[in-house]
Image (cartoon, rainbow, N blue to C red; front, side, top):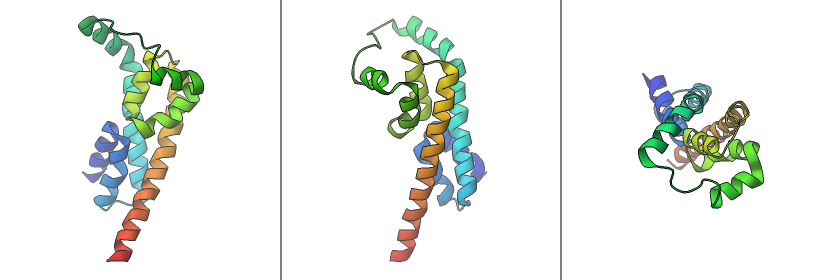
Length: 141
């Protein structure tokens, strides 16, 4: 059951996976694997269901403003798919980052590759940071 908890937490938000798994006493490599698996499952679902979801949202709420202006679009223009895939898991959940990139016109396959790289990067950093934090807490006690 703890594996499912880590998977589910990471499915929703990558920042939740590592602390959840380590708090449940799972080994760090297992926490890392489940965090990556949960995040990439949600990214893949959004990537392949994104077209239908986008169409439903447009029909439901109207077209609204253009996604081709503003700060997010400026970041998109500057760094493209590689930058977006590597950095968006840090600032927003990976599925949300995937959805935004698709709305900005990212090619699905290329986006999935770079989102996978970003999830690997940030899952690694988060697990190590949590391990350091746990070590510091134990050192203080």
